[in-house]
Amino acid sequence: MALNVELVSPEEIVYTGEAEMVVARTTDGEIAFQPGHVPFLGVLVPSDVRVYTTEGTKTTIAVERGFVEVSHDNVALLSDSATVS
Picture: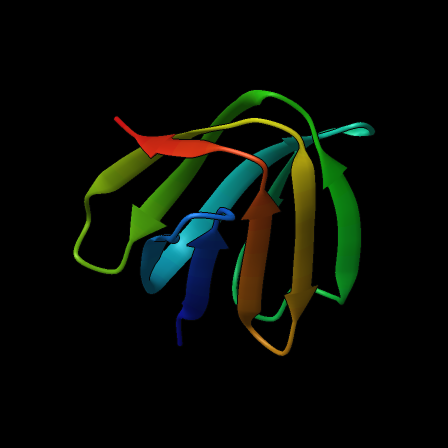
C-alpha cells in the first residue's frame, strides 16, 4: 500500500507520485504521513518536505507557506512556492 502524493504551486504541479512516507513541517511541528494515516489538515511553514518513494529513494522539496491535506491515502500539498532539490 502506498500514498498518492501531489505537490502543487500556483505555477505548476511540482511533484506527483507514490510514496511510503511524507514528512512535512506545519505550524504544529514536523509530522510524518504513512499509508492509513487519519485525515489531517495543516498549515505548512517554510521548510523542506521529504518524500520517501516506493522505489526507496528520497525527494526533497523546498516549500514556502501553504497547506497539507491527508485523506484516504492521498497527500495533497499546496504551496505558494516550491522547488525540488
